[in-house]
Length: 508
Image 1 (cartoon, rainbow, N blue to C red):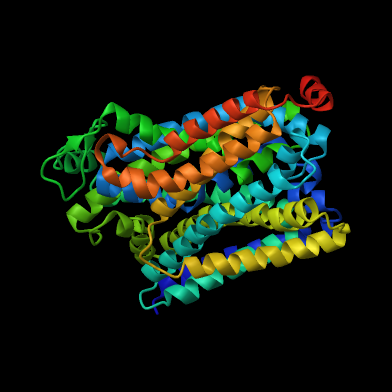
Image 2 (tube, helix red, strand yellow):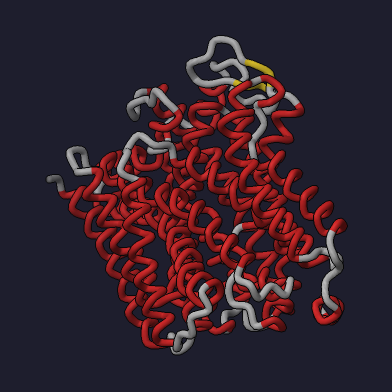
């Protein structure tokens, strides 16, 4: 084992121990279920901004996006990023404050909780369906994060067991998440967003220098037809680019619609101490997202130049290219003690991107089990200590299932996230918008919209999209439209909401 490898391992170990220490420090602050799930609604605007975006970005920011840009050029990655940037801003602008005020008025501390209270459903049907959707889609989403950790270690330390590395990472995430709850997850996410930012810029600067300068990077990219063209569909293995048409652009930008339905992001809006401060959070969060995603795309293109020059080994597939930051970090660690420490920070940043999302997802899924299913559906009264204990057990159980799904080292992080993102966006996105802005929307429309949106994701992905051609549209877009139609039609065809529900809506 080389000295650079030891230094990198120490840097990563310090980071992991630090995350566990934060979890332990905040474990005693969880007195109520609201503390565990929302931090008691006491978080400030900077913490909310950065923890929200860190939990949003996940491993696809430092693995999925650079890998996609490396292998396919600008078009696919850029249009995805544009859609996400717009979705981020609009979510902060039109959803955040109203959800914060509305959820507090109703006493809701989870997204299924909010829907049930908003539509006056005491049967547990809305909570049950919403909780089931969260569990169904968060398991593969969390699995993608665990898989990213496993890929990181196996690429950095050849011969390392993928399963062992993946399980170790999962254990750390479960440890601080189960101990510290939302407070620990938010504080660690703030730290993780800083580490992620440092990692992106360190790799960018080192990569450009290693590739021979920015001019060399651009010249190399131009050797692949359509690689730098936003309207060409290509890969580094292609000799002739295809057309990246209008329908494909709209389909790709539809990623932005997903934000309106992401439970682990929406939960952060509900947790700020003062809704008036969300304007500050919006500005900080949006700027960070635009900068970080743009740098991630550039890193992919820089990585391609490095491999073309022979500085690093080339990648033969999109899935394999997701390890581009790991490979560049491994190279950087061989240049001395300081570069090795920086490489350790970069690799900790990749772990950060995974952990900051996985912890928020685990909490959202755990709350669905303990708060929404046990209390909301089965109407079992639980004390605060009992509910927190059950939530911690749920975190562990869901993590075990996610680890089982993450056992395949060849799975694509970008592909898994894409499917889970679409699921939440279609099942919850339209409903969240109608719940906040249309008082005629009722519980029947809510149920119909969630079921129709979630079902359409599966039908479109596995039955319609494989037909190709005009049908090759990202499943989130058609499913979002179908869900919205069902909400409107079913709500209008059934009885109006009770006066008390309308009064609550109008007061907000």
